[in-house]
Image (cartoon, rainbow, N blue to C red; front, side, top):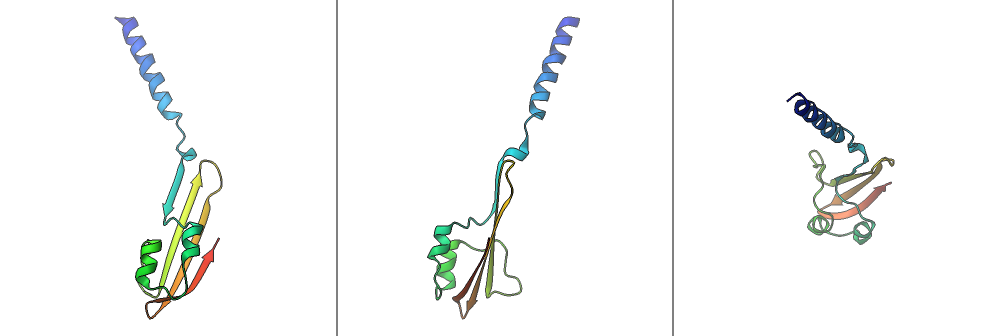
Length: 104
């Protein structure tokens, strides 16, 4: 009876230490709008807000104070590599795209 209890405790301990060894910081993590170079290249001055929303999706950073500026943010972490951050600001006037600002 004692041997069975010891074996059970050893197996539970070993299985729990296996769970603890999984490093979550090594996972790929994406957040925000995917800002692919292909989509950004397809943006053209003069596009309507609706066309931009179809192409890029709606901005996750909601334009609370200024509906004439849409901000897109994207972060990517691939395991232990440095964090990649991309930002894009789109400016509108009279529901037409007038300026594109890319920040690396």
